[in-house]
Amino acid sequence: MATAMAATAAEEEFRWLLHDEVHAVLRQLQDILKEASLRFTLPGSGTEGTTKQENFILGSCGTDQVKGVLTLQGDALSQADVNLKMPRNNQLLHFAFRDDKQWKLQQIQDARNHVRQATYLLTNRDDNYQFKTGAEVLKLMDAVMLQLTRARNRLTTPATLTLPEIAASGLTRMFAPALPSDLLVNVYINLNKLCLTVYQLHALQPNSTKNFRPAGGAVLHSPGAMFEWGSQRLEVSHVHKVECVIPWLNDALVYFTVSLQLCQQLKDKISVFSSYWSYRPF
Image (tube, rainbow, N blue to C red; front, side):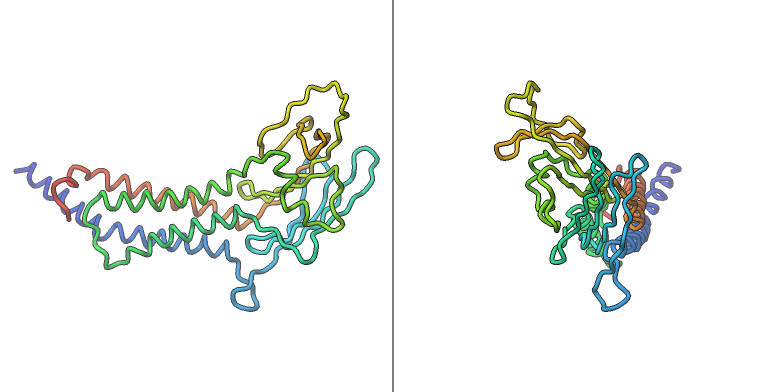
């Protein structure tokens, strides 16, 4: 008798979970992801749909060899103004984006698209939708969590590139005056930071006694890394990395973490009642 009553109470609780609690969590997730989406769109104060420009001053705790300002407009770098003090002779180089160019930050674009996809999955189950089984809820949570994890990973895991890939990147052709042939530049997002790396190169002589070993892919290459470009063998002599914090990226990462925790908590609650799934839909 007591066992039957306990089972009935558990069934009632599970029915409430499927019909009420799940939708409450879905609404909460939608609200959080709406806030995350707003961070990525950053509408301007003027014309609807325009994106405001934000200036970020580049800094480093270790060196003042590189200074500059990057201008971010949504998911694109619209301007870059960089000064580089050459270590050997203290010569000051200045380079900036051409006026007609913008550089898309694919990481931000991809993260935003994953947030949109997660939001679509959630809004596809409106308040009138009746979940029939726990497995159905788990499947939805897994799909949403996959999109949120991908969004977070795009910001926390920059692409590993080889030096020839950086050399071939369109970023090198963004500047006026053109970058000197002994400089490479890379820009990427790492967590909540916008990072600029400048590589200084020197050519290895054909009769060099150095054992030539081309470097593989890396987020950040070290001095001594070698590569072949055209008919030349080159080596990285100096690396300068400067960065700036983007506050709204920090917000977005917090929203991703909170959303993933909510999804997991709902999955855990549903899993408690897994013994009811197989024989009775609610």
